[in-house]
Length: 253
Image (cartoon, rainbow, N blue to C red; front, side, top):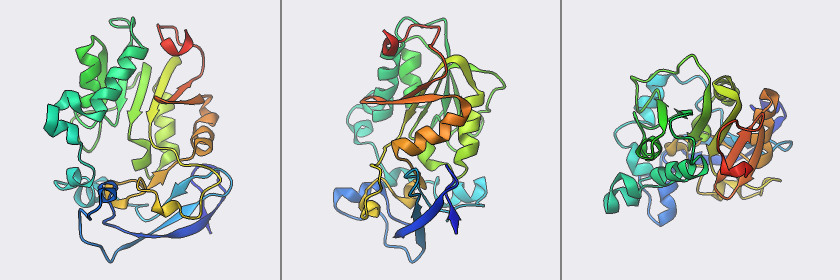
């Protein structure tokens, strides 16, 4: 039996993907050759969480060598970077969007970029450009950063949670650093639940991208509910809160 990492249900096998499958393969041509390494994925019938135990037990060094290496950008490049630089990337756009949601909080709130992709990452750069105080944390792409022992007004994780092996640990870390009257922002692709039979045709499930934990809305809600965080899925992404934020936030009028 393979146990769901979110709710403890019995995961059912939904098939295998080769390790070199990437998100960018959806554009019509394989980025990397087909690998003989087969990655088994499972679906939880109770919450819809899609996951693989294939990478359980990997060290940070193994992830750095096998996934987050020099070829990682080939797995899911951002065309905007070549066309218009950092400001044209999707991550910068998300950071700018979050800055707009929080407009008026400049100089009064601190944000934690959890899994930043740099120090700062592109989203963090967008927020900093708009006057916000951002702390970056990313053990792979900004190894000099550390997770501070403090709570933040805003914690955001853009395209991060799907990379986590220990999703319970990641949720606990995020929750521990979010102020009671803070705001959580999560950007990840959600799949429908009940889980479709052809779920592995979904381009977002891609081992070579490190997408090993893919969520339904129900699974994401179940993951953060024990921490007292209520989630709301919007067109801009998923926002979470325990109590109404004490700072300006357009989500609350």
